[in-house]
Image (cartoon, rainbow, N blue to C red):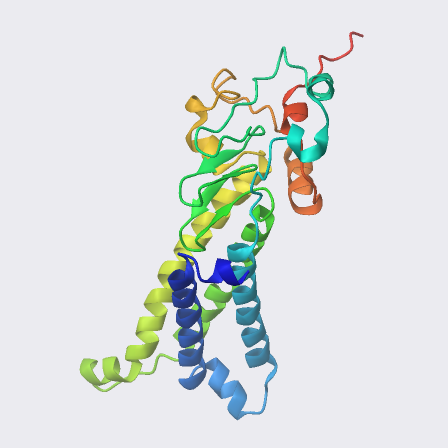
Amino acid sequence: MVQSVFRSGFLVRVCHTVLTWVITLILFLHNTDLRRCEEQGDLLLPGLFFLLVLLSVLLYFTVSLMDPGFVLADPVKGGQGSDEEMESMIPQSSTPRLRRCGYCLLQQPMRAKHCQTCKRCVRRFDHHCPWIENCVGERNHRWFVVYLLVQLLVLLWALHIALSGISPGVTWELWFRANAFLLAALAVVGVFSGVVLLLLGCHLYLVSINCTTWEFMSRHRISYLKNCGKEENPFDRGVFCNLWDFFCICRTVMWEQVYHKPPPNPA
């Protein structure tokens, strides 16, 4: 973990953490709802806001530093059985053959992709996020969505708190001087609120249809999708099942088996 902290994403993580706590400090020091609650002896709302900010930071580092689902070895070498056993489990006639990565030379499971930034193949690859400086894949995708949700709650609450602290002024110059820090915080929080809201909406939609960002954007180039119909998704099991599997099932999925759907039994 220490090596992960001090790799190329160290500066990004420091900037995120510093920016988060600087804005939080501005909201606590100015005459906002938080400050007024503190002066009245009501520490419930300030305490809840502080804990929510702390939770968002912890989730950020969890998603940023955890293994997104790197492919560590070939499926056969990884102890999942022999070639004959794999062929009996995965119908080769209807499933595209597993391809070998041209960079790390590992056999890629279905839905895996090599990340040029991380220089590793990632299972159920979604995208490489520069803000967390890590890939979003099979192991951390659900935590990434939870992080976005918590971050959105923090940002929307921070917007309300910042607006509550804007004080009137006799002239525009005095008003701007009195509210300069709050206006700066308001601008930053407003921009990030829009970005996080857009990201969360996109990811919830993709999760509901069991599709990744990479598959959605590069469908025409992916071997197991380019021959499917325009609206066809071989991994889609319905909204409820997709959401349940994504948020509640913590296991490695062999997508080759999901991809191959046996024909329905004749009536």
